[in-house]
Length: 174
Image (cartoon, rainbow, N blue to C red):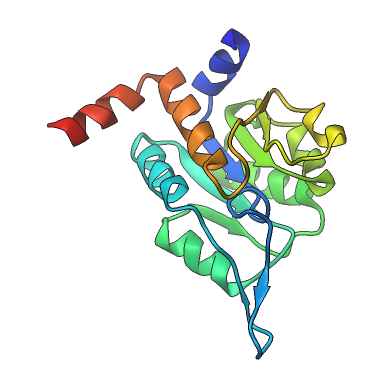
């Protein structure tokens, strides 16, 4: 766990997949064929708090849909890549735009499409539902499932490692 804390201390950019990470992986369609997803509210607050500490936020998703764009805007996500077929290319573009090194990034994913990022970043994280072929390439597997607090767990891990979590809690207690 000490190695994970050391890696988390260096994180300047948190990158997330969406389906199965920020959501439980289910996709709902209404009668008109419009899609919707369910997002965990505590993940959202955690992301807002992490952003306040100076860590930038990004989404790289294999699917492009409007509900994710709305969620990204609501959370003030710094960088959004939707409909990405080659996540390695999106990561390279994101690093070029931000000037960060891959070692300064954390990524949380859940499936094979995420391996090109998971194998390159400083802190690779999977949700417990990820297949073994994904989990074996990660530094950390969350205890909470995707769409049910996995992102919040990672956020708090990063904030605790960087020494910013207790100050945030104290603000709420004041």
